[in-house]
Length: 505
Ligand code: HEM
Image (cartoon, rainbow, N blue to C red):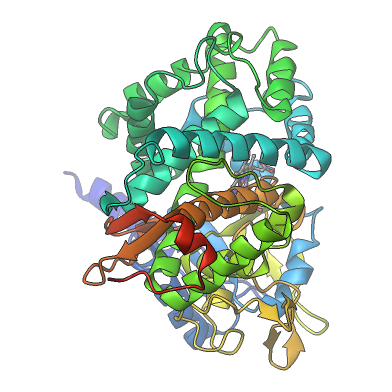
């Protein structure tokens, strides 16, 4: 190699290593020494610990260079309201318009070929809420009940059976959600091949973090083929034969049909993306709610009693050969259950709220402070740092099922530096881009747990513990590092009417 080329290469390396320099008014800059990756490896290893360490060193606001992006983390929840209301100069969809199409395999929604498509997709989100939420919740109740009845309540015997808790939650929630969203097949009520489809879904989901990071598909083994298989389930000619589909999916299908420029595979990929949105976080959230309740028998008994009380108040006799229907109103009255689910979400969520900076400007943090940010940079909120802050939540590592209750009502006052927090629990994101399926998600987790607790005694093998797999930090609800065995048996008529007992024998 010629000396000149060597000098040029050396200069290039120096420029890469140096990256950009901090300007006056900008937050402290942490770049690391690895070109392009920056601090990516340390962030990926344990994002929460990494960010807490940076907070200790640099204060509440700092910029970290991660995989080619300059990310400014806002670590003080008292600053969140200012960030969240900055709609004009901070954009969420700029990020999702690139990452989601790459991950799920549809063309970018903001492409000139699809004028107005993004707005139409966003307007479909209201069909997950309000009066439509009642319809969705009723449909989910019926589908969950049908899956439970067919797969778990058909054996009239009351002997203990064993299962794997994560597998159990994923199978039931996957099938019931699929039926609720996309409808039933032309004959029978179950779609053939749900098991293999769920397995493909989980295989795809394992690769989700790499897809979100836009890793080239050729490096991801069979992922592209698995994704294609999944997308193929949603081709319009197949979906048109299904009945009872949700209004949400119905409206989206009609919207896609208005665009000749969208190919059938593109439409199907959009439907597949919604399946991921509806199950990808809900299944692990259901697992953690079930796991924490099983690990805390006192909490489980209180919640079970609450469910029985609500059912009894409506004159429902509970027995294993009778189906249970809980209305949306009844679900709303299950406050202990809701608190237990919120507590599980607090402990298991590690989502990151991301906004892209639209122009160079000064971002106001609070009444006294602002920082300069640059166009193209990312502003990130990392709610796990609030969820695990001992000043906000006493003994934050413990599961306290009634943490979100006070005097029989929902507790909403949590404090930092003596000031009441507006944002203290954020598993569903924040502001205008908050998850549109959040109310449905809470309802379906409640429904699942109601059926589980009312029909079954549960017993977790206490030798078996699992922990949060932090490798997906930043992407939503964390998964367990390993699945756990549990035992379940039908509760008898006497169990339903006697005072609560412990489940271990
Ligand atoms: C426990 C379960 C769930 C969790 C933790 C969760 C969490 C989230 C989060 C963090 C976001 C991004 C919000 C932001 O960055 O501001 C999101 C977006 C979204 N979620 Fe959920 N979600 C759950 C269940 C659901 C369900 C059941 C559905 C649908 C039936 C759903 C549909 C969506 C959609 C469509 C978006 C994209 C919204 C947009 O593009 O503006 N989610 N969710």
